[in-house]
Length: 370
Ligand SMILES: *Cc1c(COP(=O)(O)O)cnc(C)c1O
Image (cartoon, rainbow, N blue to C red; front, side, top):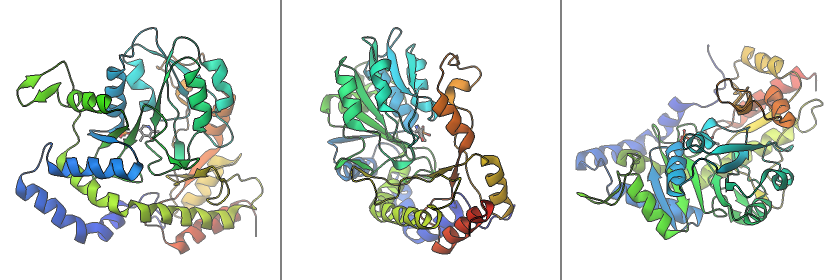
């Protein structure tokens, strides 16, 4: 397929960053700085500062970040973990694999956890509440904090899609005990492979995670408990440290692209688009994705594909409708409806204005809008 607009354009990304990235990669390898070296420490320092968190712990991926947190919090059988079904399976799997029971909450019109439903979902058994800041937009963290506090539950933020997003003036990931990030290549801040991080203001927890990610080591030959191998590769950290310097500009560009889509699509009948970047005074969205919804979703996907425009349906089947996960006792009508109707339009820093215009024109054409 000869795409005119890719959903994510890795070759173009590399073309733009090659001149600056190659010397960084060369230098890191030439020094032999491959595991737990200065580049990782630098990245952790810069990442924590970027987000306004006290500490950052680099890990192998976001899923492993959640796994280490589930271990550190001693989550186990009898514990309930409250989150959504409309998310990546990794939000839930580390807790289920430790024996905890997921409690799934339906979503609101912005595709995020409907916090009005939390009061019914939370019980004395709730150990952890995990708001997922999907698509670069934050969950109502005041409501989450209040509900969790009512039973003394811990809040962990799955901020894999929301680095730099804010709610009520605070960055995502600074509300809960800890937050997890993914640097999977397609994420806003992407590595050239798998990578992730946990951010927290809790020094003891951060130090615990440092040991857990490296076999329980406190020193080269000294262990203080069982642990995992969930280290963030030093080379990936060096790449991420460079890309982090670009992130503020990338976020601005994403917001500009969202504004452009918004101007061109807001009046299309039968199509719902995300909240525009200048609309919600409580939130600064970073547009990891630009999801739109419509009744004839599959028709729109096909229409765009035929025009050479690549789109993405992140989760056509919600977690509670996946065979084999034993979650099918949940009844979440809004989640199911969204999974039938949603698709994401191309949204990446490498998009040119005229590519957005092309996508918008083809979308309008599909709906017969002039
Ligand atoms: C990408 C993603 C993850 C998992 O991240 P990995 O780094 O691939 O483990 C978890 N949650 C959400 C919401 C994600 O989008």
